[in-house]
Length: 313
Ligand SMILES: [Zn+2]
Image (tube, rainbow, N blue to C red; front, side, top):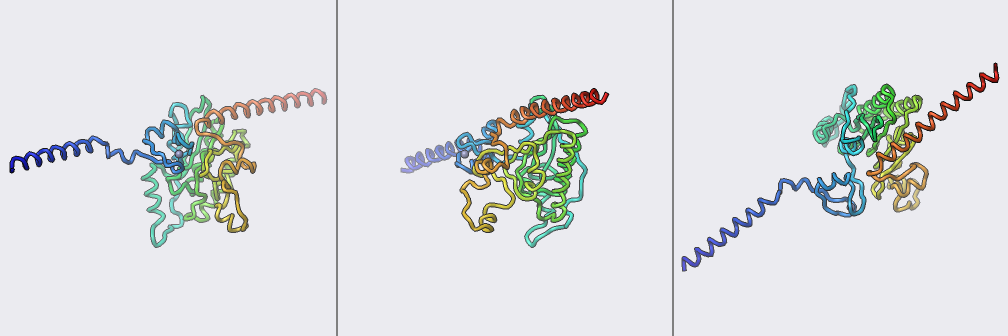
């Protein structure tokens, strides 16, 4: 009887060990490498998602990616250099609520993204053209426009002008101006507009590619591009105030896809809906067209001046 019981117990122990080994072989430490699509809930290994440029293979949902991922996708062979900028005082209002201090929020955002602000800029080649690129990172305090982010964008414009870049492209995934910085954040609206003005005066094409473009960003440099591109999807947003605020203000029903790419394209606010895999080629093709046009305009101007001189002589 005892032998019989011991045999069963021993087999049970062996089975338990096997099950335990089998679970050990499953890389549980990789659990954080899984992502699910917010739209269709399909599960992806992060590696698969990265290979597909962070776009869902099932429903084409464009994930809200950070600046580093943007730069890696956009620049040739993942090669780019971050543009170093002047450090401005952070948390100028020493803002805090009962729940948390803004300073702590910034610390955690920096740790999470490895960036100094919600917008950073880089330069490199895109299809062999010299390109300056700025990008918001939604993981940094909801991609809000702060004193430092405005400075970073402005210095990117200066860099593009100084180095005669072929174009400047900004990727926008933002929650608008950083409320915690109050007027300091709102001052970034005219400042970034001056940056765009500098590009225009120097005939450097400026492209806006947006996933979420609202508030103080859409009311300033986010709507001043030579071309406005928007990523596809129901969860993309382009507007000033949110849908619920607009609905409450006008007390009228709004289309279901209000402010998403499929709706905004019908309003004329954007020029094109562009899939992430096409954005490099779309921008460089447009740059080629614009530069040829600008060269031919200069040529025509020179010709006209020659004609005027000839007539005057
Ligand atoms: Zn999906």
